[in-house]
Image (tube, rainbow, N blue to C red; front, side, top):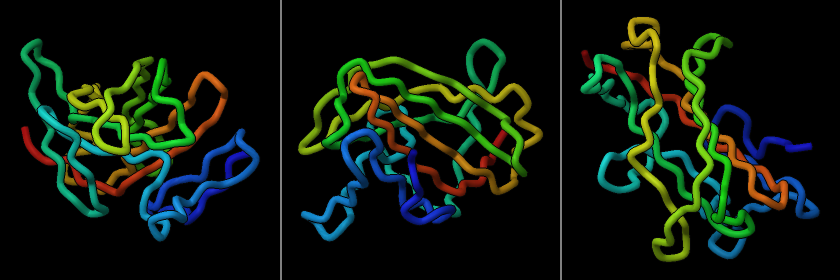
Length: 153
């Protein structure tokens, strides 16, 4: 069972499946096992309350740029990444990828993932939960979320 470290605060979730929570104690608890971000050209961290542009895609659809950063004990090889946009308890977007992330310093990252919005009008200008759930091949899971405001076309 995964238990939130600080529910609703964007402070991430502990790792499940390795004998207990991980809080990144080596750096004062700042290095979470998973971090949701954005970015088309590099990983960019998100903060609660941040606006995030809705991108008009070349095929007529709309998306947000999604990105992920993981640290040990999560294994970055063949990792399942599930991104969701949640509004008032309902799911507005739900996309899953299976990827091997690229090392960047003490973390592994992937960026420029399209979080497709089937109805951008439903979330435009509203505070939503942008959530990332990861599962590695050993069954370890971790999650992170931020309250963001999608804006734009």
